[in-house]
Every structure is written in structure tokens, then in C-alpha cells.
Image 1 (cartoon, rainbow, N blue to C red):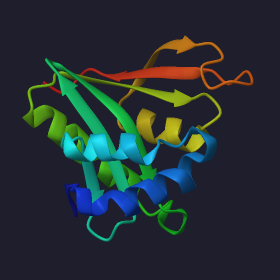
Image 2 (tube, rainbow, N blue to C red):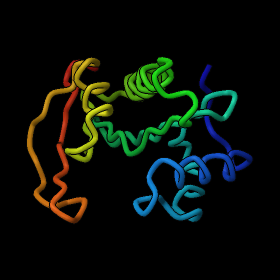
Image 3 (spheres, rainbow, N blue to C red):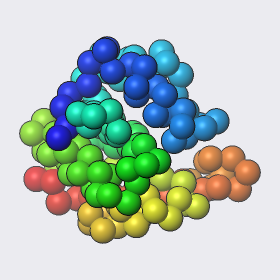
Length: 140
């Protein structure tokens, strides 16, 4: 089950972010800002989180992370569904995200949920790794 993250979740979210994204991890200050802005949904047991921001009718999926021992269990799909539900409830009609082109599991997750590639940002993640920009347009 997911719930809105609070500042009490800072340590767990920041640790999971560092484990999941390594050198691309957010600083504790950025994680804290996302929590304070109510952009973070966390799994009750701390094994995953998702960050989604809504501005007008567009939602941005900024982060999704699942603990290594919970990957492949459906938790990522559950977190993504929670993010879509949150975005919909806040009036979004579409959702955008960027994902590293070499992150096949994440691209598979998003594609299975109905996201489609709409563009690429060359070298966005450094060392020749492009960002795949994906959109889910059926939120409304």
C-alpha cells in the first residue's frame, strides 16, 4: 500500500535513492523538498517510492525506485499506478517522464503501462546515454 511521504521518510527515501541511482542520486536537500511539497508516495514498508509533480494538466514522473530485494515483484507497477492515480486526482490529463535509454527494465515497465516514446535527449545522462522521453496521454 502506498501513502504520501512525510519528512519522517527522509532517511529511507534518500537511502533508497542513493542505492537505486548511484551518482545520479538526489541530494538529501532535494529529497526533503520533494517530501515537503507532497510530491512523494512511499510504499508502507519503505521498499519503494515514486515522485510525481502536477502542474496544470501535466504530470511529471520524476523518480521511481524499488529496493533491490523487491524488484520483479510488481511493486514498481503498483507505485506507477499510484502515481497515475495521484496525477489524475490532481487534474492531470497526461504524464511525462525521462528514463535512461539503457534502463531496459524501466522502459519495459513504462511501455507496459501505456507510455510511448515521444523524443530523445542525446547524451542527457552523460557518457553517451540518451534520455528517452515518454508520455502517457490517457489520464483524463
